[in-house]
Image (cartoon, rainbow, N blue to C red; front, side, top):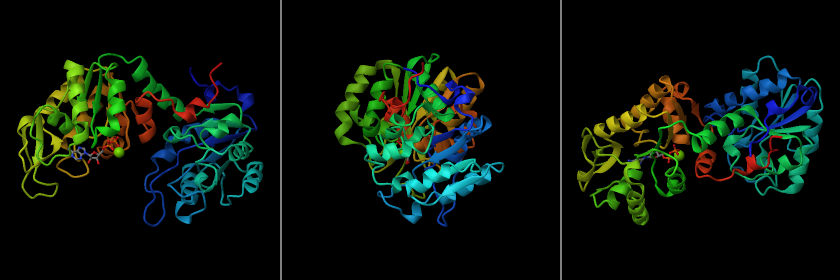
Length: 399
Ligand code: ADP
Ligand code: MG
């Protein structure tokens, strides 16, 4: 069932109304307490602009970090509100420091407050337990509810799920809509060939994604340390590589079931340790030395993965190909990012999901060259597992 979005609401439903918008402003802060990366704040600007242009007052709710149901100054959204104010020079952004909901409600009624940012929802008792009383109180902050926090939609919290039952209409924001559209279309009606690239450290965290993607994709390329568990399943020596011993049987079963759709690395970049001074070298996947570990996919694998990507019309990528935080083991990951950027240029739909993969793409300066980079790490993973995201499910169905 498709969910209603802000664009489904007539302008009269917005003019002069208080739009309660759940955003995901869970941004990294620097040591001195300023916003270190404002990507997530910028990602919510289109929804804020859309609502403001139609005369709605915007009331923002977000969590930040993991405070334990009480105010903790280190997790205050005050620096986030300040950055938001810088990004919205034409608007009066009012930050409500108090966690007293009556005071917050009062602030939402002040006509000169264009945008009201409330304090961290995780300071509130009942947020993470999705307490109904808190959800009803939060609902009083707005005349309609807009959920634009895709990155928090996999959690059934009072400000993501509960409130949507009490503040109506409850619709998706523009970012949420975009996320659901790109990820949803890839899973349901991908332009083919559809190639998925999976990597990262652990197969255990991604097994449900593999299961859900296998019947949908034309090729599944596997890199990262995850590949080593498959190597072990195939009887290869894996040396000191990260292998999940308790997943070897499962990997064996996946290899026999998926046939030609599954593409594993044919070579590996190995080193005795991450900070070994010896220059890294590549070896065939079946010849990883006993006292070394695979830290990246090798050049032959890069070539075959890139050619699969070049021939695809939909590419979905989750998880780096190597220890990309540690050059030179970022080469494989960078090559995939470049191949995807080129594929976008030739008309393919390219989607990146996953926190570390998104960071790698941003670092390579290629975020703008992808069709879509998901803002939700955990949420995109759960979506790709085929799970219903509670924050989405609670929104109104499109009429
Ligand atoms: P994402 O956040 O994109 O979903 P993951 O969190 O699953 O990605 O995986 C990212 C981590 O996987 C990175 O920290 C990276 O260093 C690690 N990784 C990738 N390949 C290897 C490898 N060969 N050996 C050890 N760690 C690896
Ligand atoms: Mg990660």
